[in-house]
Image (tube, rainbow, N blue to C red; front, side, top):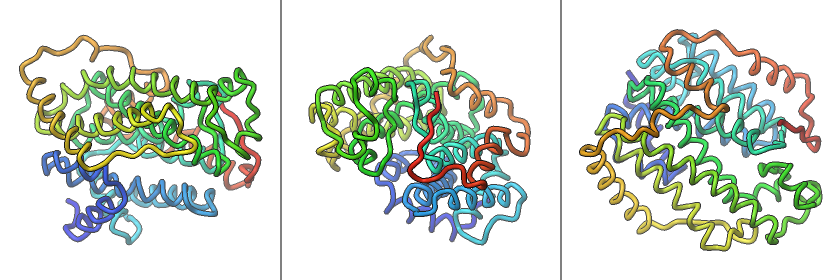
Length: 340
């Protein structure tokens, strides 16, 4: 059980750190909402430390130590860590899921860039779909088809984030657009980070990214409709709110460099209302055959880990390798590496 004071701390952290998730979480039943807030607080803190810190490699290595301690049943003396350790114990959380998130954050610290859209989906699987799979575990959902659709939703959300933040990321020296798209457009990545411009080519890439996100949002809907009924409205709200960010980018002519897409409270309330209607409709409609679609190649390992419902191995070789790279100082700033 999560300590009440630790849960209150996580609730406050999310309320001030992620308005979209906080709004959607209110629609979840307490049995899911409370551990979800604790899970998200731990993941958000980890992401912020890596994303905003000046010593990203050190932040990832500290996160790995925190994860080790939590799985050993002796978490660091901090509310997020104690709450996460309680989640591990109560829900038998497969270690491969938070380790996937750790790997994605390590890729950020190593300043990886991604050669293809598949590489971007690989990254998205780790930093977003892993959280979606963990949310399923909190709902006691281990069905592979439901997990596959939850992972689709995670990738879609992350692609939306990337599309929204192209300019902000570029000004920080980061590129998440597929490098082969840039090459096709004759854009040099180094020049792009120095002076990102919302020209027609870049807007076209943002459009392509959002089109892929939309495809996955549609695939995810059949999965939302097989979740526990009481949890569907909250997940529908998250899906509609994030997709709404993509719609705002479209209204801006796919310019996510000179402006940043934002949604307002009235829009969020509208999507919450729509989510309640979608849930009501899902109760009286048959299961969509789309739910049985194969998982994305890039998320299949998450589906496998979460659906097996058995103890995970201590650490994956991929995670050990990237952590070794960080320890050795091979992920030097200003020397981004590429992944297919």
